[in-house]
Image (cartoon, rainbow, N blue to C red; front, side, top):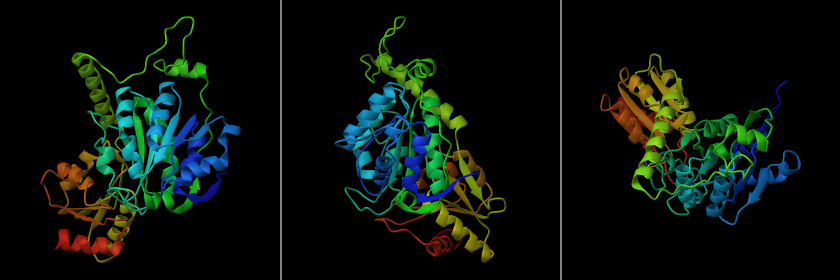
Length: 359
């Protein structure tokens, strides 16, 4: 029988990480995601599964600890919020260049600067567009429920190791802080050193009698070598775009107007669409679950049948750029958003839809 538990989204991440067989968590406290590390400290998984939980001296230190553990083929992760993630971006790029798998949870807050501890979705450019230097991408999962905070933590490890890339669970502060019922995933064992050698021959685990040690680096001294690395990465990203697009459609079969939103904005947008239906307006919702790879083709397909699109975000408008690229001028794409930690109501979204799109 499934065990249903009431917990915060951040707490669900911590429990799911332990159950996913995570070897090490390295992090630094920052609101609104501090409960992830606090929950892990309370759970003391080092006594049960052997998982390492360490508070680093900074976000910069934590991402470099992740880099080192990932190079050993370990399931490793960190978590932070928007300003903290900004400090990690150099590490993001180094990890991408070294082709290492790891998981990062970003529970977004308002900015720029230190900003506010209130929720935001303004890290879209920073994460989805690769805020660090170089031509790299990270798989980005956008949970909208506490259940998905748990499920996507496990999925993030699977995808990271499948493609040897970083996978980010990109949640807004609402989803991280709210409490809902959740069914936690089953326990997975941590890999033994022998299993890591067999499954991940690229990992550095020291010398063996029949093998030289691997060298993990993102450095390439020759232009031709750097181009070869980049071409290999771009090929991998195209494979991810082919195989891993995830999205949810709600009431889109007969929709004449479309709302697009992720995370908490999608939940608010769905309620606004339901309210519109009660008024006789045929409104549907498209929720991107993966922000990279983005559901471009799905939005393009829906744009062929609707009269207009409204994107809803807790930002000044970032995902809307990708929606407009997908729609490619077929129908108008309008934007509605709130900043500074203000979360719009379904009534406000419906009003914006009528004023900007339906007119």
